[in-house]
Length: 94
Image (cartoon, rainbow, N blue to C red; front, side, top):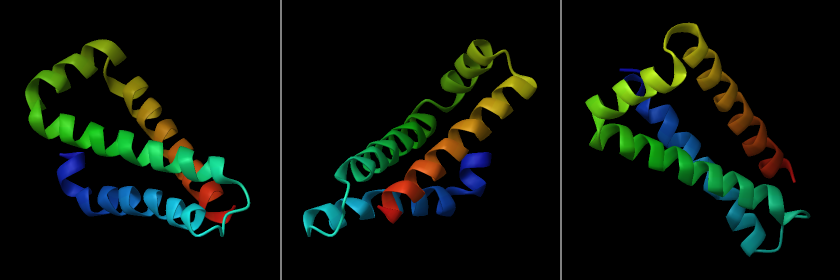
């Protein structure tokens, strides 16, 4: 439900994650590696969303088993989201 409710924000993250590669292509980025990291994370986010929609029930059960459910999974997801946003911002500012 999270993904369906916030899909527009996740798509915006994916699109904006790839924008720094344009800066690298036009020679406007001083450091190209944050742009590459940003694009890779955007692709991983896209792969995760597609995987969720393709294997909805199976992946939910797997993640519950792997992350022990509850608060641990919420903290992990929030931490990964914050890390992705920090890397997107670093790539954008470089």
